[in-house]
Amino acid sequence: MSYLKLDTGLLSSSLWIQGDAETVRVWIYLLLVADGRGIVDETVPAIAQRCKISVKRLTAILETFARPDRFSRTPKARGRRIIVRRAPQWSIEIVNFLLYRRKDHGAVARMKRYRDRQRALRVTPRNVTQGRGQRANAEGRETRTDGTARPARSLPMTDGTAQGIEALARDLEAVVPEVTAREWVVRASTIPADDHRPARSFEDPRKRGLSESWGQATLTRLRDLHENQRRPVPL
Image 1: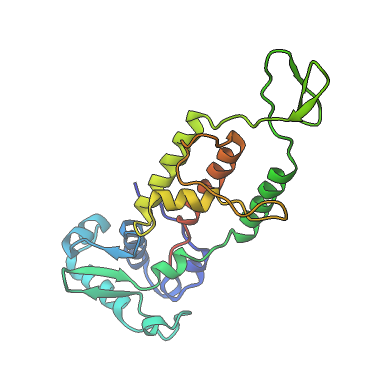
Image 2 (image 1 turned 90 degrees about the horizontal axis):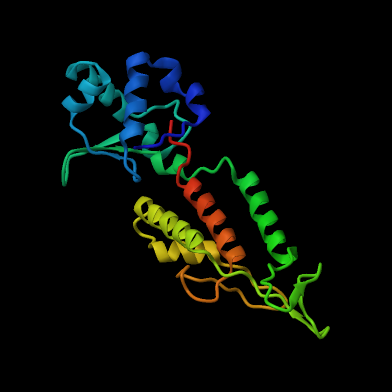
């Protein structure tokens, strides 16, 4: 199932202002069925049937989309909305698809969430695993019955968290094939260097020694990265 996130700039575009209902319907249909590169791999009769218009009418609309538009807000291809490709096979390329997909309207809010997570990783006391004859004090340290203390051990990453990381990474790989699932995991799990430790990351969430808190932070970042791939589409 495709997902379409429309940019509100469409409402002030020359297409919306000057075009009729059928023209707008065809444009939104092309956006809906385009792949991750903005390519529509459908024949003219198939598009016409789904848009409930004649082939002749659709051909006229596509010709309008393929002509230069002096009122366009983007200079690429002289304002053309589509380019019809005839090799290696007939297809329609939406000119500004990737431009609008990469346009990030939520950068400020997402950066705030990222900084909040980084701050939480630095200041949140570590989870404590309690054993026989031990108790955890408020500072996140294990205290033995003889009164000596040692740093608490983080809880290990659960299978559910690891499975969630793997599933999201595979979804991202499907959307952006040039980046592998393991590379997505490395990006999401990276913790920047600080005064005490160098930058660190992992590529296999099932590796021994990884903490649940690190896994949850990675899962959250993967969700943000996944959301980034569902950007506003072009006008």
